[in-house]
Image (cartoon, rainbow over all chains, first blue to last red; front, side, top):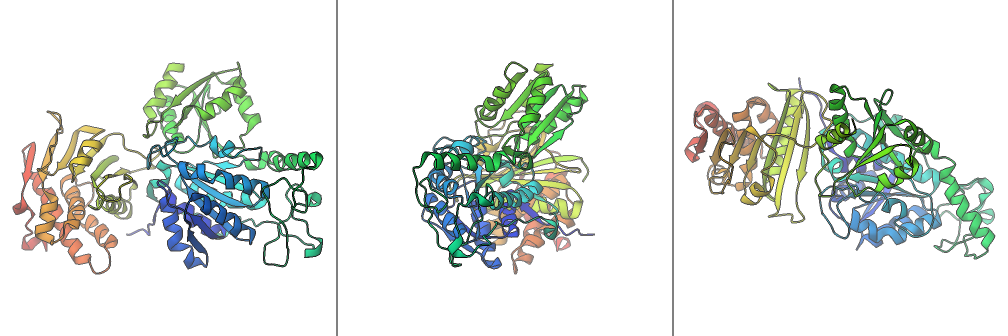
Length: 377
Length: 204
């Protein structure tokens, strides 16, 4: 009996989910290990009535998705470290102008051109602070193929709901692997769209906080004219240097995510109930950690994991609770300790943080993690 | 599948089609053997001529750690990829390399070394070198018995571009024949020639 089998790679699933979420524009510039996303979109997006545009460079690609989003399109770009660096100025523009967009970064080794096509998780801080100035941050870090599909849709929903760029952080392992998976029923997926103004054009202000921290957004070419700028602006969209207005606007933008953090953050607890040693992990590294935990449990070691499906924002209260009771927290990551630094602030003197940092372009092996677990015991 | 877990690597240089070999094997294991399989290609910035490999991790159950740990099977069509990717090889692994390459393999391992010029065989028997990857998956099936002959044939046909099914079927059969000869041999180092690739009537 032959089963109907469909193999997907992680990269293909980003593209498929984007289309299922209603994405109608992809502006990109191919860069490994994210090129397969552009490839998928170039083949499939036009079939669904969307537009694929290969731009002249990474900067233009980011600019183009901002422009397309302003016309009402759901938009995606995909890149990797060097391209993510180039995009940062326009990403800042998208934060300031509050333009929904999804940026997928398939992380590779850096800095600079670093390790093309090799694995890293070293852009998680860049996803937070890559562009200058203060702004809210949402970054998703799936670890499984099914999750890539679900979380790409979630990235679009969050971008549309909060009117901002949302980062989808993959690593090379999960972007490139292919396996046969069963996708959730598309019809059952929740798809969210941006809130549009209910007032006529002459009464419309693009940054009108009378409707809450996320102002309704009018599409260009539907009769609503407004000014879009990277300068600090008032509710009309025109520049202002009024300290009170600028202060209030910055606070609102931070607040629109901070006040909803408990609806945004997402994590999976694995064998946490009796765990004395806790692993914090995200992305493909969490899969190695899970194998290490299973092996440690066979040795009678009480170890569990908090796996961050959403890396920014973090579940602060839960992390603080764990820091107060854990014997040690082990943080394996494919960088020099970017999440560890954050967690160390939460932990203070309450628990010991053990770092596992690999930056050679090959995955952290379950044995590497198991050895540290044994060391703690 | 006769074992619970199996790891295979097909290596070469970009353009030789080894990544397709991995895709066909993973597809076959999932579609016809009821296993789980994860296939991960690795390539360099050079599209053609760069060291390339594909890893296939096969398991009867869910695969949590998606990368290879201990390879049961390693095949390389090129010195470049042999030098870079000859790693994580089990002591009793089956290793298949081109006899023109310098295997530089430590003594006492692997248990079985098969020397066969797949590219030459593809050129002579199929008229095109690009069939070497399909011959390679056939050889895999013939020597490892991880996937049934009929199932690897079905997997090849399902993945063949329209109009090339019969040629691909011939290529996979050549591979199976080579693999069976290598398996039957009691020698630790088996040298296969183009004579071993000849299909008899019973193969057709």
